[in-house]
Length: 84
Image 1 (tube, rainbow, N blue to C red):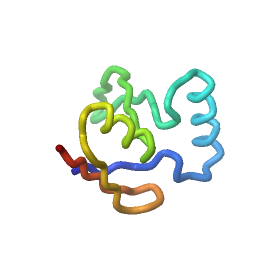
Image 2 (spheres, helix red, strand yellow; image 1 turned 120 degrees about the horizontal axis):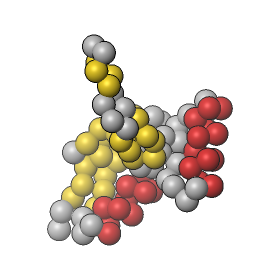
Image 3 (cartoon, helix red, strand yellow; image 1 turned 135 degrees about the vertical axis):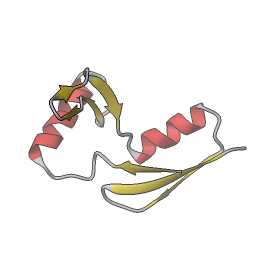
Image 4 (tube, one colour; image 1 turned 135 degrees about the horizontal axis):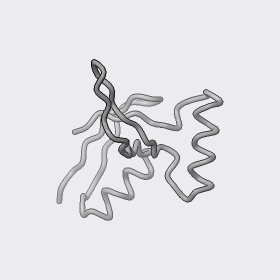
């Protein structure tokens, strides 16, 4: 089980522009580069993928999971992967 954010559940123009830029580069709309900072320490940049429900279902099927159950709508979702 995982808690995820749907990157497409936004009307923020900056987010929508970022999604469009990713698509133009052949990337998923919810792929971001980020880094963490805490008390003056800053990590290296790393990629974080926030998959859409459809992307998550395809990835799970390709990985051999038999079912994906998504609860919730909008930005916050809880996802359960079913083996079998």
